[in-house]
Length: 158
Image (tube, rainbow, N blue to C red; front, top):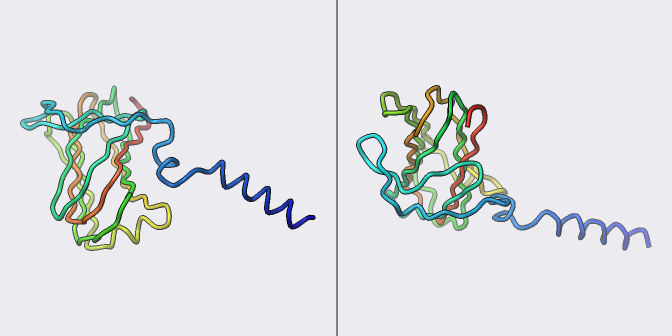
């Protein structure tokens, strides 16, 4: 009887967890990242915030550009959820730009297997502190082959 009750409680707890993709997206709305929004001297595909996420693919050298808007200094975390994992490649980079692209910050994987680093949760993430208020160009580049979901977590001034 005790074993059955324990198994039932475990099953109910697991059902509340949801699949990893649902856990990653939560109650965020999916946006298309296929626009041409002007930022700096280029364009970005979408605006991402704490309430949205986008879907995309890396196919040996793909990149995604998007805008993150802040009202002041903020920490901006970029998180990638790997829906599929064909090849981790050797180079995954995330770059954040201050408003006007006067200053750029870069996080590189350094040849590390990003799928392995993402672990069981299949989430790879990096953060950067941005100091200016306004529209920040953020770019994710990877030579991996994967289907991904992309979100940002903005803390501080939003």
